[in-house]
Image (cartoon, rainbow, N blue to C red; front, top):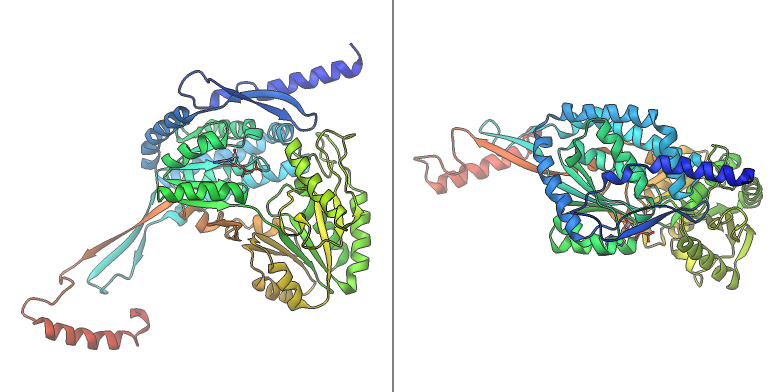
Length: 527
Ligand code: ADP
């Protein structure tokens, strides 16, 4: 056996150890009839296989989740929060192992996998310490001050069904589940086929932190097979993925009148203003465009650069990109990793090849890198992109950005808004007031000034989500937890009823009420 053969064997052993036992976290009705393969994108080879669950398995998962939810709901919010405080610490303690699994399944660079660990720990911390405030019952003014006592309670919806994608397998499997669980719900999740081991590992740690097994159930397999039964059983559906699949899931939820939130695709614009700090913009937009090889719904795929700094920016941007370390590696020094799959590589290649054929100019990149691994694609910058090209308006979900020049501010805002999507935007200017003012005119759910996406995403007490075809509802902040609750208004009427008092004829009551209404409109506390 050569040295490289024995090294490869040792690597396989380490991988097998990483994944060992995780399958026990999958809920099945009996012995699984079918299985599906999971591969390592760095090599394009199989690393394991998991049950392809069917509708029966979904049914069992929901039965268990409903049983588990009843006891979980009875615990106080403070008691539930303790689990997530422990989870926060466990995620940090298990950071290296989590990074290894995320990288193994997704092929992303370690620095991008680390963003997921950060996100999960910060989300656990945020909601663990804030859930009591968010969920507390509140007193309201009521119909008749002094006579009606009204309060609002926030009950869990029951079982939340989650369908999650492969691009942020750790973060998206648990960060949306944390507020759902803290609100007293249980969760049944179907993670993406490509990255189910990561979800299983993340949920295994939640159990270690004290979450009862039935409160978070996992079914693995194909969305086309188990998506519909999962939606049918759910009391709320939380979906993250493509706009195309989101439409299918939302319409299924609609059939059952089940509430849902959808975080979908984007074709996110970046705007570099004439007064931008060009070096800072270059550094930030490299992260903004190429994090996770561009497989990030909030990454920037359209970049509008002011004519005064266009030449300087483009030269520095291309230079910096050409210095990026692209490759397969488990250390933090790699800047850009692999795409996840053959399918994703084909999509990115098709978009770029079509653009080239229609007259786009490649400033850097524009080719696959099979020398680095089967699905690698170079960070790519294009100019001369026009509407005849698919990538002009459609999400590429790869390391490809089209750069355009602008001169008029109203015009660039119009161009940025000229999209069916509305997820995220990035503005670069040294004048923060100007940035704020431009931001409010952009039709996206988040806008980052002097950052690509991370500032708004990591503002965990503020809502995050999409306008237009980029989604329904929001994650993070109060909206990110209250969506998993049903609010209930309880009013206690004291003394007088809501009609004419005994002995007062209704015509007199109406006259007196009209006078009262006229006065009340002018009293601030009574409007
Ligand atoms: P992609 O095409 O990039 O895989 P999707 O939006 O299709 O993105 O995938 C996101 C999640 O949706 C995955 O867990 C996937 O298995 C699931 N999914 C795919 N098709 C369906 C469907 N018809 N119904 C429900 N879920 C689905």
